[in-house]
Image 1 (cartoon, helix red, strand yellow):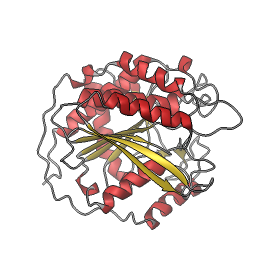
Image 2 (image 1 turned 60 degrees about the vertical axis):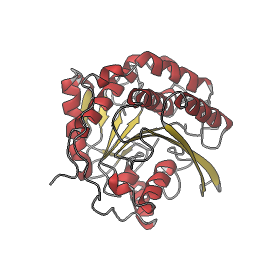
Image 3 (image 1 turned 135 degrees about the vertical axis):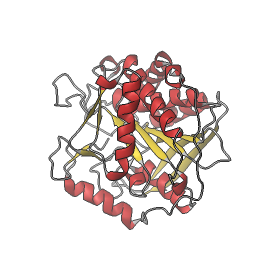
Length: 333
């Protein structure tokens, strides 16, 4: 996944620099991402059950993660990723949600490739008031076997369990599994954030993107030593970032949330570019050396370094965040 960036005059730990961030942003803007008009629909507060976060079954999410990792490395276009998509769709068919496999082709450094987003809608006839998403692909590393238990697997499993919890709830939500989050060479131009860029562009063209009240992204949420490290928020992230801290505090999980001094390029960026409020729930300190992130993007990202309890913490915070934001009238007067 694309990660910490040098931005706002601060230097991050990622291999992704400010020049590459500029390429990502300028590329998206050039593709027609000029911002959405004022929403046409006024969303009234929607009460969701107070115990909604506790309904997240961490052990079931863990079983999903085990199955996903069993498919092996899952880079975009691979047979293993197709098997993963099949498993996710199979699980979703057990819910009452409408499921779509959004397949499309786009240019990459390896030439034109086919990608597949998976979308589950709680109320198909309604626009997506909320988008809750993660990616399910892994980065391509030909030199070693990268199964991406945390980076790619954990978000796919957590969002799948979130879908089960939100099934039949009175909320207009889209649960999305993005393909092509990982770059092939470098996060610039058409390389990386492919699935999220495609979905945001599609919704923009359909004049539905301005109906999205909030986009909640999960990524790298399986680390045994779990702690959400929220990126330094862009202006459109500030409200949701504050709500994350409030949600965690209400659940007694405040110690699991901290704020980074840096920004992160992830699948929420195409939505932010369109003036959609978004937040990235991510633990970008994955390893046995504090601050070194030394299990990220290498062969050590395995199940042994993840835990169901971490999936549970992330899932509960995401659900409490959703519950609190759903109680807000939007757009505000």
